[in-house]
Image (tube, rainbow, N blue to C red):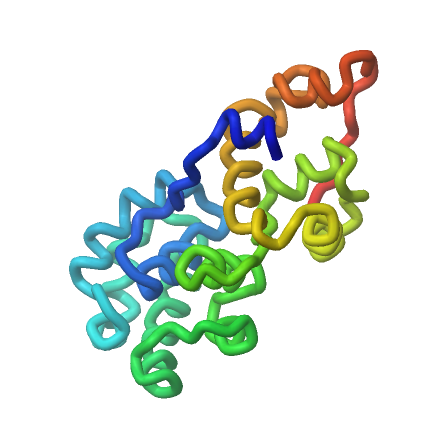
Length: 207
C-alpha cells in the first residue's frame, strides 16, 4: 500500500462520467474493452441519452450506432436500453445504491456493481478486474483460483477504508508497470522489491 501510494497518490476514475447513471453505463460498456475506447464513444452516447429517460427513448439501433466499435456492441446496446427502462420502472429513474438491486439490472455483474458502489456512492468495495486478479496472485496475496477468491482474500488482507482507492491503484500499476506480457514477476519495480532473489517467472492463472 505504501509503494502504491507513492506511485499513485491520486486515483481518478478512468472512465469519463458525470453522475451515477453515466458511470454505470460506462462500466457496463467497458466489459472486454479498454477504458480509452469507451471514453471515445460515450460523449456522443451521453449527449443523446444523458439520463435514464432519454436513454430509454433511444432505439437499440441508435445506441448501437454510438457504440458499434466496442466489443459485444449489440448485446451492450440491448442491455443499456433495458437498463434505462428498468431504472425508470423500478427506481424512479435513480441508480440504486445496493449490490442486490444493481446486480438485478441487465449487463450488471458483481464487478460492475462494485465499481458503481465504490465510486458513485462511496461504499467500500473491491472490484476485481483482470489486472487485480493477476497481480494478487503474482504478489502472493491470493491463490488465483477464482475471481471470487481473489476478492475475498484482498478484503481480508487490507482495511476496508483502503479498498476503493487501492483497487484503482492496483489497476493503474498493472497497466503501467506490471503488465501480463511485460513482467514475469521479476521485471517491474514492485516485483523486484518483493522478490529480489527470484529466478523463475511467476505462472499466473487465467481468470
